[in-house]
Length: 138
Image 1 (cartoon, helix red, strand yellow):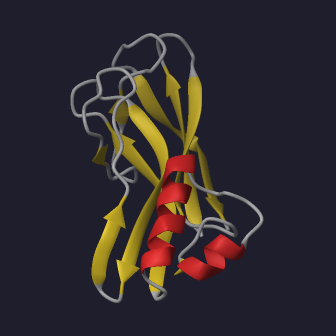
Image 2: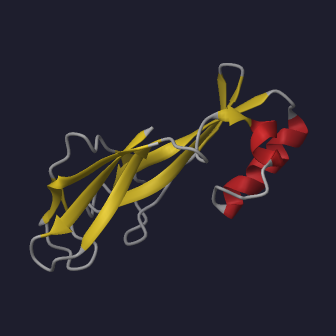
């Protein structure tokens, strides 16, 4: 289950949706179950890494879900699929993301409390949450 938030720029009108949580396809599961799927649900580099890790260890678990990240410099929001791989309780891999504009490392943000950000189109700090466009999804 997850949440979907819509943000709209008050300056240029650009609108985008951001998801947080897990759903039918993107969810936590044993790594071997993910690799048996016919679809590659994650970035190709992540998928390759998961295949390599599965050859090194049979008992891995993948925690996956949609998360919203924000660039600490540009203040632009990004909708990403965060993947963390565990070997029992030890983290073996965790996704890291960079801003496509300035290459800074993105920071996980609390989308539930975030009111505004920078518009990725006009680069003004007028990107606001549209309170009437909130969805729960499964």
